[in-house]
Length: 158
Image (cartoon, rainbow, N blue to C red; front, top):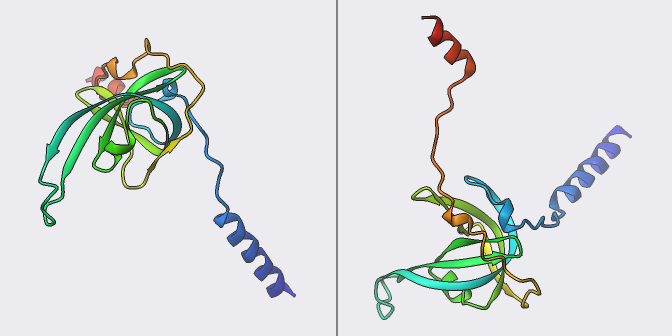
């Protein structure tokens, strides 16, 4: 009898572990340095190609393209780094859903990116007005080492 209960519990756990979680959408103004796993809906305001290497005609060389795209929602805007195939999706005027996006730091400022573990989808046009006067990529951050209070206390006694 105990083995039947154990089997039922194991089956219930397997079902629970395979259920997909509903995505939690965040707003641009909630993005912080060093964070990842963001899902958000944003409008693409502009796209600027910053790097294009390789020849598309050659089968052996893969073309590398990087574009900086200004994206935003009703809370603010941020720069998004689009790589290779992502560049086509990030056309000005498109509304996109970014899944599993992360914040990269570049020269002290935030850049949103989607790596191989994430996904970009073009969706229906959103009905919000982008707040362009709150650019999170213009905020400059500085890495500061925090010393434990215990260590700081020990150093002052010497």
